[in-house]
Image (cartoon, rainbow, N blue to C red):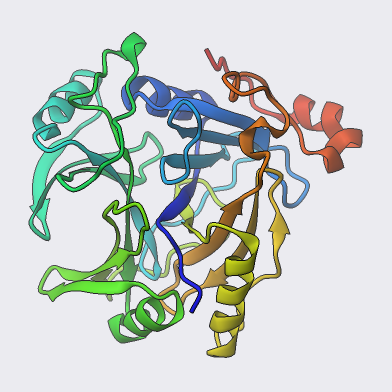
Length: 319
């Protein structure tokens, strides 16, 4: 049986490119991993990647800032709701103080037995930093931003998905992907994402029958998809065949994302999941190792559109 091993990345559509870059690299201390453009459609929009200095899978958050084209969506139910990242045990108070000092309202809360810091991206998307004592990943440090090993983000913890029908989502996550159900109580459902390295990563599901249906398209202010790591192409295609064979036919053919290959499937709970694996060249395909995320790069198939795309992008200082 084909299985996933942890998260690959999480992707959201945001608002301004500058505030997005500053939020992830300065407030949260992540590193710029890649600056490129949206590969789908014709609208010039950045695709920005943040994570560990080397762009390790399971640390990557990617964004499409949609301020210039002015395309915005609605946050609601049947949609991914919250981005969650892992931090060391005992680091929550540091982040509450740091974020509030920077004008980002942050509060400490506990859900499913884990202490976490709740705050929002400047565009409004909910984020949480979750204390995890069973995460062997090294914290992402950023001396320039005053973030050391005791407090640095370790990588993706998971995401919260809001649904109207918990039963259908339960079946999808445990049978189609498949994940392991860890909790089922008044707070919601928790599913563990299998990971060969032992990292605890999760999908948390909450029931929301009161909010309006959330936007599923690429639109500012919303989470677009949650990408799980299949490790290689063979495993990806086996898992794709398994999912499609169960009747989840809203699943894409493999798409070339230059640095990784992807298939996308819409869950019955609305959240879009991606099955991804990193190509052998990875981030170094168009930038040398140690220098990734320093320049604006385009995929080979946009060679004849580079000037047009660059002229249509929002101006931002990525320093």
